[in-house]
Image (cartoon, rainbow, N blue to C red):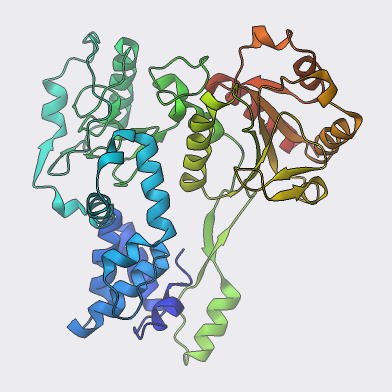
Length: 440
């Protein structure tokens, strides 16, 4: 973890070495780093020994952790404004809340900086989790009226770290049975942006994160189980169930990263440093999660689903460590797909089938077209993909009852395993893929 940090920071004139990594890891183990802002503050205290190094440290930090390069004499706001990191963050934010389109650029930059530098020390009041639970009724009926878009409260938090995890899980199950709506900003429901002990995007030390993004790194336990989402798992993916679909996608067997002592490197570096043998760690990976996504974005029948599909896989790309490549087609595939949404940059099928056969291949489309479009040349391409990738699934946004109404959908569903584009359908597809990956 962070092995390249010393060398990257040295390029900015900062005195960093393996000791920096050891102190950083020790800080993490002691629980001093729970947010991204905590990381900035802790690392600054380790590296910056005099005021003149604060500028180089800030540049190094933004470059290494956020891929934002601050040019000589450039304001931080301007560097953020032109960065791909900020642009992706902004796109994700607007997908979550389109009403923010009316905000000016200053608003977005200020919000980005607030999230980057938010520390646990910004919270002015920490409430007792025990007192909240004692005053709460886990069997309370859900009468609706939740506000899932309410922002996270940054000036107060609740501490549930002393509550037994078994008790929290039992209470959460009681709440789940009563919950029928999305909620946010409170202390009772499984929701977002509040101080409830279960949910995401809030401020609850020692709680349980259920779906969504972590952000503050405060949770003791993470549950990505679709049954904890009060949504219809059999509905085509949309804004209110995209996180349930994401939880299903997360079930694809992926990298299991662990650290172990790198003995050869430790010995080599120890000899170079005159007998000072400091432990060097390395990551071990069991299997890398790699995904190919082919999206039919060419017809009016697919238009209502493109936004949700894009949101789903963009979240997946930013939330999990894996490779994700996205290509586009219209109705069917002949000899090529396209690497851009406007389908102007062709990408040959022969290059796709050159990928590692362990890639998971997801195809998004309704498979409905005129029979003459499914030519022998097209079928050859589909068969080539089916033969190369054993982990392959077609996700169809149309209800299953409609599939038999179209000749091409019927044919393609027999050629390639087809599932509905719903959280439950994705879960079935992922289970099938995992079984395929376990076969020799």
